[in-house]
Image (cartoon, rainbow over all chains, first blue to last red; front, top):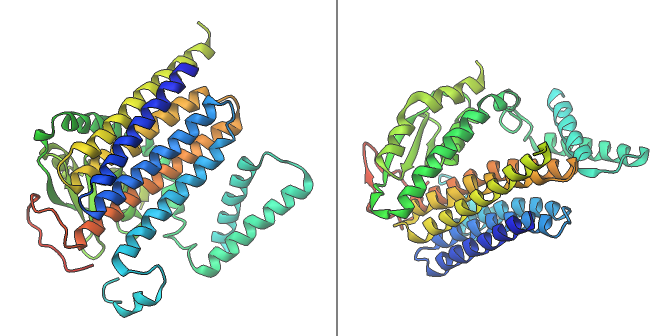
Length: 98
Length: 158
Length: 113
């Protein structure tokens, strides 16, 4: 069982590396956001599997929070790309856009 | 009022499942935090049919197995394309959705994105159209079939 | 073989297949042609990979509090993953960086937003 968990951890590490390479290469900023979002998903799995590997399943709480923050972070970055701010006031200026 | 009760019940159930401490004081505090969160949600106006689509949530288990099977099938298809990127024939198609409510339309778009090989790019609420990007001809064609549309419509139950 | 061993075996098999799926998904992220196609690679990580690995952990879970948390993580990933992907796809579409090798039938591009 430990062996399978270790293999899974290594596979997740390799996958995260591949995603980070894509984030570095780009070429558009959306590629980078997509790759970073995938790295986040992989990190959630990594935390969960590591919790089992270490025999401390409390790590799952952290994985859960990471999943939520990963989503909010992606949306925040996309909104920032579009409007140049995270506040509400710019939304009123181009209301016909929203 | 009914929405607040349902939301409180769901949040309290979640709290009970996650907490692991079951003495009187903590149970009471947990209940009041669930109630407070629901009241704040009601004040924000997010507890409507769209924010808490009970009709869909209750019937969700019905299609879960079918959805998992679809996801596994298309996973294999996408892996085949990844191993040989020349097979990719990306295209954008319009899919007609028959759902009446916005929550159903969103569920349909989410299901389309959930199955690898198809991503919903844009949702048109006025015409009930979903713009779908398919990785190959097969994926795009599978999206146009009325299968998934019928399943999501059965979730709405009307 | 006892029932416990069988669930363990299913769990380990699921973990290993899930690892493969995650690696293939990341490989797709790296290999496919443009940003839309790469989303399908990311989709494999979010659905096949995450689903199988979480199912594998579910089979190995020692008690029910862990099971509940695993199911919740799965639910959160299933709810947020497609939404994030759709947000990125829509952002690409309304931006000016749209890849032009997409054969678009019967549609015309809508304005910004």
